[in-house]
Structures are given as structure tokens and as C-alpha cells.
Image 1 (cartoon, rainbow, N blue to C red):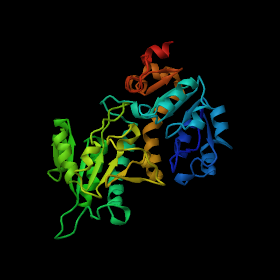
Image 2: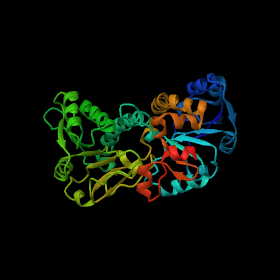
Image 3: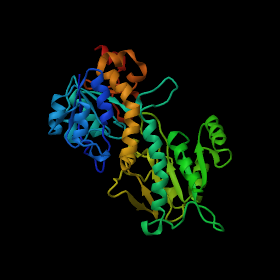
Image 4: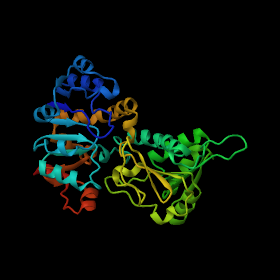
Length: 371
């Protein structure tokens, strides 16, 4: 199979779908790899590094899309990309379709087979291809929140860690999954006063054990979210319903009870955001203010640290990518966890959460593949 890797074109997206090391693995398994010129520049991998790994360098994205059997990307295809996809081609990337009807329509019209990193599962009930970027985004959330909290950046002017004689800043994290855990690690490391809110009592027990009393945990209710948001300097939204739009847990009305200059960091923005007042921003213009509250809602947070995040992503995606390259649709038919990543196939939605969110009729993945 010929594997194609175009350069990412989303605003300030420096990651790359295939590192030179991944190219070598595909080549070692008997595949050809076509990489757009400059695709790896953001991680310090020039065209010569890809040539040395065995890839052919394409002069344009159009060449990559036209000649490849499978497209490996990082972010969801942009309008100029989804029109180049075609039936019989596999797209393997993050999609986040639930809050994105235009992209969904474009993929359906293309006839492509689209496998979303964020809905591939594992035997433990986890999301192995989402986890590494959730780790990065969770850690970045605290860096971003701490920076936005500085007075010159519109924030309250609070140092999260405090100093002797002055209380530390307060961080409220809504959601105790991978993002929440990693955000808490960073916030605790800075010396902040941290509370994690989650609706799973077993998870709260686990988090309490992990941090050995260094954080507070609260069961998620409207009252608990309100109280923690009202007292927080930084609120991190870290809620995920796999494949579906994120629930709006912080309403605009709640903003009036928050401290002026407090920060909302919405890590769930790829799935539509978990704050009512959230809308996607970019690294070039990351924040905006609503009712005196600063919102940080960058939709590709890990793109800010592409060297770390591209390698972490490739470590996770390579195994499944080799399955797809080696066996095509048969890999999806035979592997339930990889098949859970199938969101679109030949003009049909094959993911229940996406179909429900956007009002489409869903066809079971097995049935779609058999047809």
C-alpha cells in the first residue's frame, strides 16, 4: 500500500502524521510512503530525513492525496483537503466530527473510509490514540492557564504557586480522566490548591490515592461545579464523552459568580467545549473575554509542542496504522477496537455518538464494511 502524509495546514499546527522513524517502520513492512515536502519541518525533520528513511518526497499536497491509498494526518481535514479524498481511500487521523457538520458532510460526499484516532478503543476500555494527546493537553492546560492569569495578559494577576506568606492560586479541574490527571500533576507541581470534580466515585478514590491527599476531590453536581468555579483562579474543562459533543457544564450565568480575571481553559473544545461560552481559538489568538472571564479555547493545544506531541502520537498510532496498511478493510472487520475508530465509510456514518449528535442515520460498522 502507498501511505501518504501531507503537511498539516491548520493554524499553527506543527505536528506531522508520520515521523521519519514511523516511515522506516512502514517501509520495513513492505509499504511505500509519500511525504509532502516540508511536512516535518515543525518537528525539525527536513526532507532529507524522510528520504533517508525511504520516503518519496511529493512537491504538493495534491500529489499526496492523488497517489496515496491511505492518508495519515494529525488534525481533521480542512475544506481544501476533504475535497481531494475519494472512495476506496483510507483516512487515518483525528476527526472530532460531532461538533463539525461541515467536515462530516465533506467526508460523506467524498466516499472515503475515515478512521478517527479519538474513537479507537483498547481491551481496557481506554482510548489509546487519544491518550497521549490528552496527556500533553492536560499538562499544557496549566501552563496556558498560568500564563493567561498574569495581569498583563488580562488575568487576575495571581501566581498559581503563591509564595511564603501568600496563599497559592486555586485550580478547579472538571473531569478526572487522562486530561484531568495530567493537569492536576502540573498544578500540584507548581504548588497550586487543586480540586478535581468527577462523577465516578471509584475514579475519585483512585485520584485521591494517586495524589496521597495533595488534592481535593468532589463528586460532580451543579452545586459542586458552581462552588469550585466561583472560588477558582483557573478552571480546566476536561470532560469527554467518546465521539460525542461535550456537555455544557459551566453556563454563562455561572460566570457572574466567578472572580474577574479568572481563567477558563477548555480542553474539550475539539468536541464542542464544555463551557457554554466557549468557541474555538488558535495559537495566534488564543484567548478572549466574556463577562470579565478569560477563555483559552485553542483547538489544537498539543500543536504548541510538536516535537513532544508528534513523537508521542506516532508511538500510539503506528501499531494500528500498520494494521490498516497491511490488511486494509479486513483489519477493520477483524479488530473490534480498530473498528470502533471507523466513523465514516462510503457515504455513511458508522459511529453512534456522531450520528446522534448530528442527526444522521447510523449504519453498524460491520454492516457497512460487509456492504
